[in-house]
Amino acid sequence: MSETSYNPFTNAQSQFDKVAEIIGLDEATRKLLRQPMREYHFLIPVQMDDGSTQVFQGFRIQHNDARGPAKGGIRFHPQETADTVRALSMWMTWKCAVVDIPLGGGKGGVICDPRNMTEREQERLCRGWVRQVARNVGPDSDVPAPDVMTNGKHMLWMLDEFEAIHGGRFPGFITGKPVGMGGSLGRTEATGYGVIYTLREALIAKGIPIADTTASFQGFGNVSQYAGELYTQLGGKTIAISCWDNTDKKSFTVRSENGLDIGKLMSITDMYGSISKDKARDLGYEILDGDAWLVQDVDILLPSALENQITINNVNSISKQVKIIVEGANGPTTPDADEVLKERGIFLIPDYLANAGGVTCSYFEQVQSNANYFWEKEEVLEKLDAKMTAAFHAVYDTAQKHNLYMRDAAYVISINRVAQAVKMRGWI
Ligand code: NAD
Image (cartoon, helix red, strand yellow):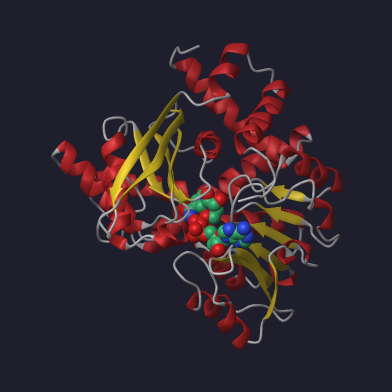
């Protein structure tokens, strides 16, 4: 997480306030939508393997559920904060609205470092998280999913605990489940592929052949790995990728002027998205400092790790060659840095549009789980591509028509959709 004092929730609110002003949103709707409707903060005592007990802080925050049950991931991270979860829950509301799926926005988290916990300790933590909120979440009210440092295994432990508490089978309670246990084919690839579907459309709109482009990624976890895979398949060349080194406790960048082999990098990356430095060196790649990913002479930057990574302190070090920034991560750009990108005329595909593939596929998972009938992977990815492509063009057309920055155009669409739902329900 950033060393600066940027607060993601303040950022999320300032993005909202700006567009609420542009569209002339009424005062009551503004008040309702600029903060979460419900928050649960709780403590989770976990028995550790050595017999001691550690007490973890957990959160579940539901920003808005006017368009459908709240939806959003659960992060395990040592620097998790209530404000991070608030911001992420708000972005989930806009994300579900921009891809037009019938879900609202929620987010959860635990302040912990699973990299320093055994599997059994993580299982107890997952079950403990569910015990604290089992009555405030569920298939019809709030549906969690994986996020940073959580995966299908965690989701299944959580589902198992939820079903034990409520006495039944409720596969629609959680998404990101393993395939064969209610999960959807294509979910693993969905966010990363979705990022590239939107990039592909942007490049077509700008008349730039993808095969002529180069890119640099921040992060090499679930989002970047599959974004990198599809980007390569479509002909793009990845020059640099940064990730976190949990031994040195700092990030580093892997670079190759001739292009990185994404498949090979995936094979030397651990489950938390940390690339083995030694094995990357063995592949002939340069190892640079953690910020190097941002200053590369490439056409496309894909910040896909964490929030607050492009700030007023480093935005001017972005190369003049960069034409497009695709925000794979949630909230990677601070509002002041965003103004600089806008002035420089860099084309931005904003976070909650670019990375909406994950939640879109989660929605497909719910549909399949509820019908107890599962689609082929090609069918899932085809439907995903159609949704992401339509969402990109809706935002792009709004931006063109009203001469808006892409982030603002996405907000115009999402806020209008959620405000309409709030009004139709008679809440305002
Ligand atoms: P992940 O845990 O799989 O990977 C995170 C990656 O970021 C890892 O490679 C890690 O080494 C790297 N990283 C962490 N700190 C870093 C730092 N300071 N500098 C450079 N790299 C660093 O997470 P993910 O699922 O890929 O998610 C990444 C981002 O995308 C998050 O903002 C998440 O909220 C967002 N997102 C994820 C999904 C999804 O389906 N996975 C969906 C939507 C949004």
